[in-house]
Image 1 (tube, rainbow, N blue to C red):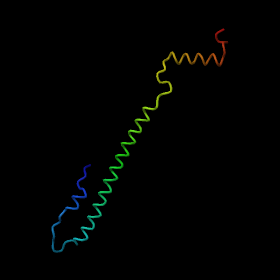
Image 2: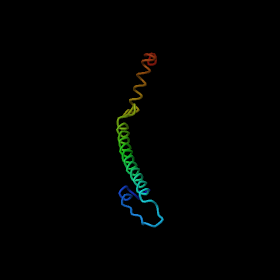
Image 3: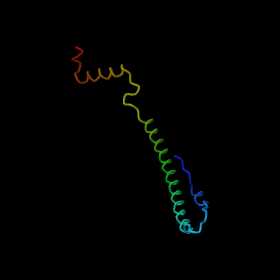
Image 4: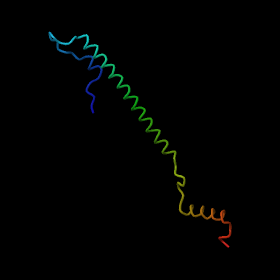
Amino acid sequence: MEIKLNSKMILEKEFKRQMKGYNIDEVDQFLDIIMEDYDNFNKMIKELQEENERLKKEIETLKKQQTPQYAGSTNFDILKRLSNLEKHVFGNKLYD
């Protein structure tokens, strides 16, 4: 999608005059409204793009801050934890 007009192009547009043409003042007033809308749309687009970039950076920061609960744990560490848990729950009865 490509934007073909901007407010400057609208402002500088010249129309050919004809005997039974449109009222020039009405056309100019309407084009002024269109120019204002274009400026507002461009401002909104820029704000949304900036917000989008900010949110993307925030997501990346949050992803970096989150670490899995057992990050870096090996199978040996997990087995050791299970063994300690068994000792705590069942006592030394299992090992007698």
